[in-house]
Image (cartoon, rainbow, N blue to C red; front, side):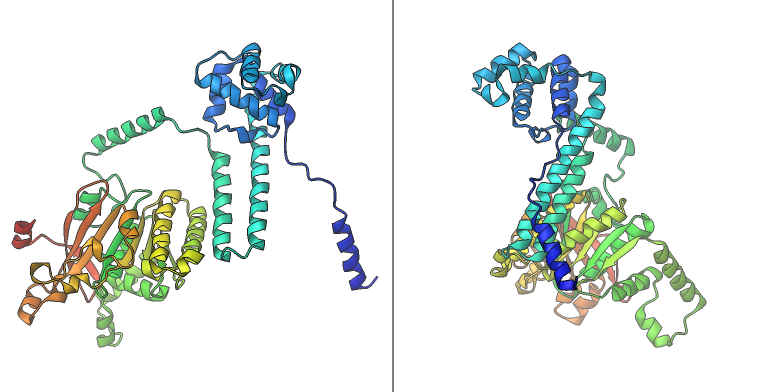
Length: 477
């Protein structure tokens, strides 16, 4: 048989697979659990609800109906017994759907033992998860054949669906107001015990930390500035603090700068040896400078900093990569992105509207922060608004200066507007007076106060450091 005949034979074999596919199911286990609910309703039904049981756990339609009736009666504190359930099913006009009185009795009097709850619930949940995986695969199959969605969107959707299935496989409790209140009380107790300690991750800037109480899971922090203000340096200074001082893993997406340049800037800033020094001295550094540079290199070698420098990365690709990094680094502390306007969204709606594209990216980043339960710090560009202002307001940015979309302002939990006064000085004398002066204006803080964070910028080291506010700043505040 030649190769063509073999291929034809294989095709014929494939086309003969006409038997219907049997979905994963466990009818006897479904009966067992429903019967347990009648035997010990308070214990069994409460455990089922707490462990996240929904009607989708049941494959047999009649069993779905019975679960719905039983749960409704439980929530109304009504009796759970065969006679009461039979009457409730009849009143709902669904008796025939459950197989009449005989079918209902057959299920609810099924021979079982409540001691088997754990193993039977586990088996039922496994069948449900398998069906969910099949449904997701079928959905992805249809999307893959469709030309309506971009391939990166399909991949992102597939990955998100799989992550949701994984999450549901480990979920052990439904939402409970009592549990949330207990969690809030625990947080309050911890805050009282900590006596002013940060609730979230430190940025390395005391004044900023005091205002935002640290970077907290699920929050989107936008740091915006005009070009050449040093926003990348400010982000890298925070990265340095998180990965070296806090010793925590961090993921950075660099849409503008190659990773090697980012690492170079990190090393110069940490060692306090500037690139200009290296060039001027022709490689002849002092022993102290060499020591500081070597120490910086070794510290970063041991750190858990992950950099992705994919240019023009799409929001779907970024989210997919972040999920994979979190799987390999479960203690990931934060995500940094440089910068928002260099990202892309490939939906059809975004192709025709830059404002819509930015809105999708901004919303996607906020969703990512909530999904991964991590703080996301993203840099953004401002329009020319600060340069067009006059008088005392010249150079001072506002939230309305965020480029291309008001959605950023809406999605962000915190917005910091970075600017340096010397950039807008009208003469050399004024420029010299405020040469190193910088400010991060915290214009939005959803869970705390706003206000100015005074900084100094060391241009040769590309480093921002905290400074005391000037008398004029104190007077103006």
